[in-house]
Length: 285
Ligand SMILES: [Ca+2]
Image (tube, rainbow, N blue to C red; front, side, top):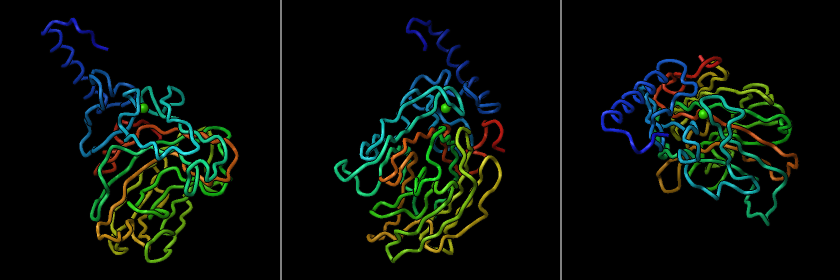
């Protein structure tokens, strides 16, 4: 924290040091120095092609929208210092037990957060990077649990979602297509607890399956080659304005009664793979 009694010269020096620290963080490890000298608010992206960063280094949830409707049966999102993938902070999202209609749910228990980022529209070609950590005891074998989704702006299950389900990470979608289910399920990897996983998703957004596609990397290794869902990566909206938004966190079958906790860190949205991985040390490469 910078005090309020610095001389003009010292302020300039502090500002210069802050800028150098940001530059150094961008060029080297990026581990823990990113927000030094940032002066509050979200740190300015210092990486080419980086459009938005949600690294929790502000110490609060200000990089994300205030969406209380995304917390049903879950605890308030909590900024924590352990475990952490990048810098000094990550976020903890927890669901304790079952939910029912008396909790105000439509379809599941949820504890999700939404990046302060614009709608995703037809033609967008974007990269999404983030790290997730399933806490020991997370019910990996349970039925559907969504940990990130690209959600249309109307009801129904989304065109694109990352799940933990029956012991595996799976990319799924299409069930809620307005023209009838065009479901797909792509197993990606075994879901294990107690380790950080670095994800990169590259999505070309389109309701046209000849245009839209998705590809996925886990810990620097491609686990889904370019794949075009038959329902597209966006749904055709009833009003003609095809659009989704991205949210991340924990959304699961309301009948799961085991407590589950997941951590996220280093969320990024950018225009290239480098933009969402630069500065993150191994295993992402
Ligand atoms: Ca962080």
